Image (tube, rainbow, N blue to C red; front, side):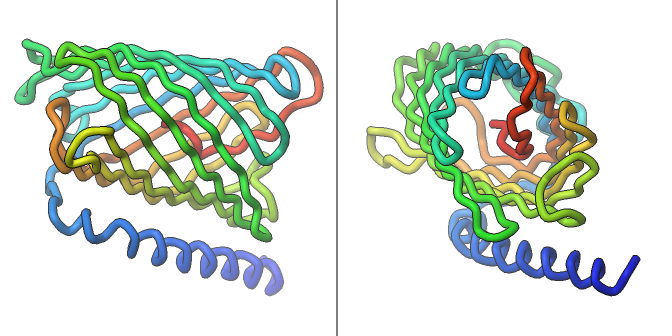
Length: 252
């Protein structure tokens, strides 16, 4: 590896570390209040089909456990439609089924909660030299066995390529995000999630991402705060020629 290449990579690591300290400082006040020593697993497959340069469809199953690949208690399946207004603004609408089981076993009955959820969201993309930021604003309508609820979410996601100037095929990248959840009822603040990890874009169709998630819940009936090892497989397909940019790190 040339000296210039080494400096190139070191610079990106420094930038990512600085961003991590800023985001970690933002979420630490809530993280410090609840930390679970038992690490659960969080598995995601996100498949996106680009119809043309503006419209795309996606489907995403998820599976979670309360200990490391044991005590599976949650799964979801969702899909939706995305419209790319321009390179900076993307809107999405979706619907999904979300199911939470009792703790203490693998899909142990009875259910804690079953839910059908719809949502609309806006993503604003922002580039700062090699850093890609996206701001995600989402409004959810939750039809649950415990009644109807509204929820509002904001997530700041940061992606920094390590061995290239952009996240292109054969690129390693670092990722960090923080998300806050609010409701329209007292106490309003509901949840905080923090992720740190990275991934590798194999080609224009496939990428893998893994990392650590800390989830803190203020007061909620369907799931308590946890720590997870998260692994995601991200798929990107095109119906026509002229591929859209494939930017990993944006799964739910």
